[in-house]
Image (cartoon, rainbow, N blue to C red):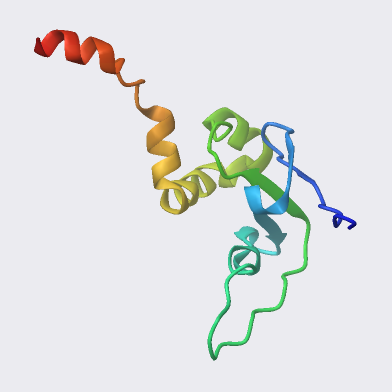
Amino acid sequence: MKTGHIPLRRCVLCRASKSPQELIRFYQSETGWQLDKHHLIKGQKLKGQPRPAKPYGRGAWICLDGHCHQPKALKRFFKQQAEDIEALLHVLLPRQLEHDLKPPDPKPEAIQDDLV
């Protein structure tokens, strides 16, 4: 049985190649960079609603995991819109970004030793 071809896209911030399900797509319109909502709902079935048309324009892909969402990298690619894109990413991916900013939890053995 043949396996299907999985397309790869490259994150514009960290340059890692991943499948489109692991990335968020932005596109450049006349008003600037916009979130591609078509990409976000592509895998979801919408009951009674038509699927929006895929937007035209230059596309840019960003990792979902948040390890590369550094302000300097965002500013290098998105220029003046870097702060807007960063705020949008905080809304879309709050758990991943909070996880990246938190210090690692202490080892469970150390906690048990303190309780005894």
